[in-house]
Length: 293
Length: 287
Figure 1 (spheres, rainbow over the protein chains, first blue to last red):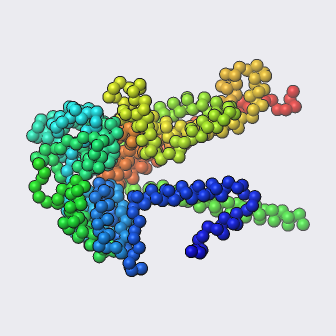
Figure 2 (figure 1 turned 90 degrees about the vertical axis):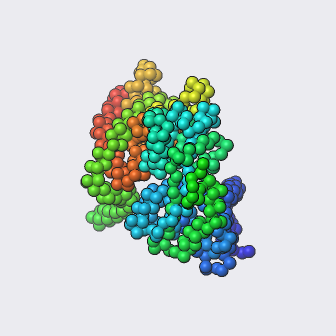
Figure 3 (figure 1 turned 180 degrees about the horizontal axis):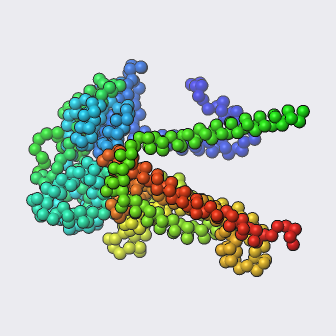
């Protein structure tokens, strides 16, 4: 193995005046780098070599942050039948992803956590026809400290230090709608009482989750998938189905995508029974059907 | 012969200016272009609409209030710290100086988490800082704490080097002339270091004004209480990019106005420092 990148020539050309330890130190750095690169591989498993060299394609998927865990396991399954496809994810807030696509980011597929951002892109003919592939159910998450005092959704009005999503981010919008529903059927001042105890309007759902998981806030409203990912650090209180507002997740190929055929394959896989099973394992609901009880 | 030499010298001088100016100009253009892009990408109507946005005024007021408080705290506590660090020659002082600079390299969001872990409700100091169930998180005071944490290092760094640049003989002479240590610090060291202190204060204040990540983590985002202008910009970004753009321009305008104002107010400072140095060190030979 005499690779042209072998380190020997570099080391032997080191001036003699250099102190002896610089080589050792360099080796330590190499060891540290190797360790670090190992850490990264845990996040993104190394890809098996392509069976046909040159046929390797890279499919770039822009997906809402709440899809991180689910799409990760979907990719592993998808790879088994599409070994020549490398899949790269860009997870962020749906609004940020939409802005990036509007500024011609090289995306093949867009999966949004709300209809609004997808709709805006569709209006501008920047994506193909979207299909709803999953739904997500808002739940109340409760910090350990307050688990005893908050056992049902109705008690949310009596809890202090509540954290919700900002009104313009999807989770905040759904929370506002379900609080309105609660005000209609539970108590007329339900929404005001809850909002009087709101200490922060977070900019994404993970921030809400973190504040509750760290115990800073007593309660918050997040998607069930997020709550499930933090299991053990907080308790989950379901919101009655008749009050709840389900988030619909649409997916669409991006217009003029560099890998249109592969993009269509991914969308098909997400909608297939195998893809749906993985999504539901992560806490998502099927795109249609009766709401959970 | 001499005139040819002079010409050569002038030509070399010009070449040097052109090369250095050209290199520096590259950076200037790179730094200016995004700001220009922001200005060009926002119409006057968008800007007016941004100013009228309900998030702007509470956020602007809160930003000015909190950065003012954190600036005062930083200067009042940071000046003695910098003087001490500049004077001390022991090892611990070097270690302390490095420690003070750490927040500059810590990503702001990590700084926010660190603040939570120290001063949050489950933080290591929660037990003896707060009554049970309470914490500083989500209050305006938390905004100030986050700003001090990320901005004070800039002040201390500038202040330490300003104090170090003082000619030590001036301080010794002042002492031999009978000035008390307090008087030396207040009447000699402070005036001499004041341009450096002012520059550090401006830098630190600017950093506090733009602070976003640590505030969001540690103080949350609630209009009128913890939502500073950068947080308002990010909140607006979720709804409408144009509103966020015009809020950003508001932030830039406020920063420019305040920076120019402070520069103008401090315009006299260097001459005062010079006067102080003349007062304590009469020119040699004027014995």
